[in-house]
Amino acid sequence: MKRLYREVAVTAEGDGFGLALDGNRVNTPAGAALVMRSRGLAEAVAAEWSAQGEQVLPDTMPLMQLTATALDRVASARPAVIAQLLLYGETDLLCYRATEPPELVDRQAAIWQPLLDWAALRFGAELAVIAGLMPQPQPAGALAALRAALAPADAFGLTGLLAAAGAAGSLILALALQAGRLSADEVWALSLLDETFQIERWGEDAEAAARRARLRADLRAAGRFLTLAAV
Image 1 (cartoon, helix red, strand yellow):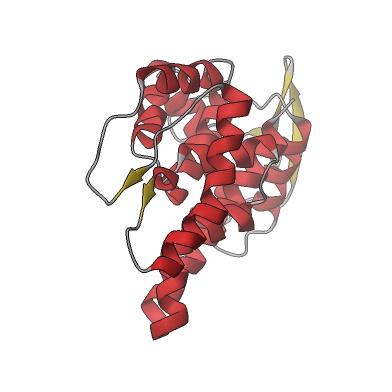
Image 2 (cartoon, one colour; image 1 turned 45 degrees about the vertical axis):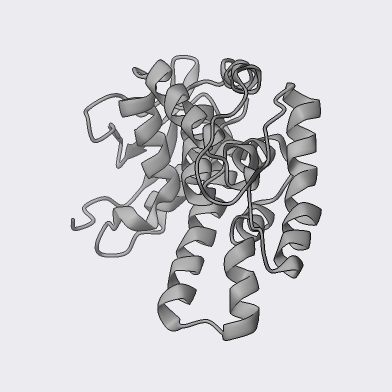
């Protein structure tokens, strides 16, 4: 849509912060008030609006999109969102290991296993490692521990985790990003370990490079959102 505003301002909204365009309050796509508890997040979303040119391009405003998702969809559906996140834990990328070649098997063990060990120590979630790609159930106790780890998260935290887990294919990597255990670029690299292994041997085509770049951008946005939304 065409940009029709000149000034973007962060406004006080009860115990949070909102945005105004030329003095007019910004709402979410569903019509809810755009209210964030974190001033840092509000200022970052305001910067996205300010950076728009003659046209307002939603795809260039990832923090605004994540904020709207938190308010319009996640806030009213916490149990469903937690269940969706647990599905990533049930089939977590880090748990499914190659059986060959030996170089890849060793690389996965050396790079992925420390994150599973961290999750076991941090959350009490001892996930099983599975050889091959056939889905197998995870221990009920591990999934219960992950559910408990997710329980304190507000709508903004759950939204960031869902974005990160979806991009990485791993709830453990998303939790490590939220906790500051890994950076967004580290999550990106770990989530694409198998693909990178193949690229080292056979090269990378333009389509794959573009997809990898999109995943990196998505994870950087999710990581920044999680950091800014934390209060």
